Image: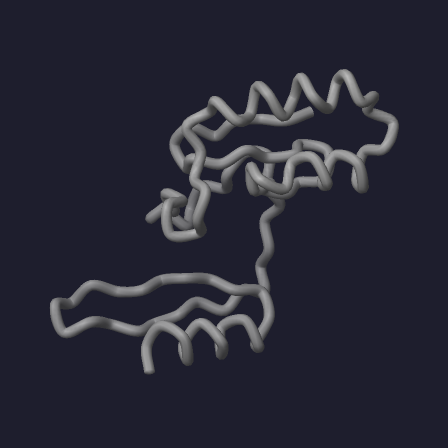
Length: 111
C-alpha cells in the first residue's frame, strides 16, 4: 500500500497516488484508509518513522528529469513550470498544477 521512494526521500500511498508527510501518517491513514486496524496503523507508523525521508519540503530530492514519471504518482499534463533563472544561471524549475500555486511560489521565492 505504501512505497518508500529512496531517491526522492518520500513515502507514497500507492492507492491514493499521494506523497505522505511522516508526521501526518497517523491522521492520513485514519481518514483515507479507515479499514486499516489500529494495530496495523501503529506498525506502519513505527516503520515509517525510521525511514530516511524528508521532513520538510526543502529536504525532498526533486527529479531534474521531466521525461520519466515517478512510479506511484500520477502524471499531470497541465502543470505550470517556474522559469526563474538566478544570476548564476541556475533555474528554479518548480512545477505547480494551479495558477495560484505558481503565483504564491514566485512571490515567496523570487520577489
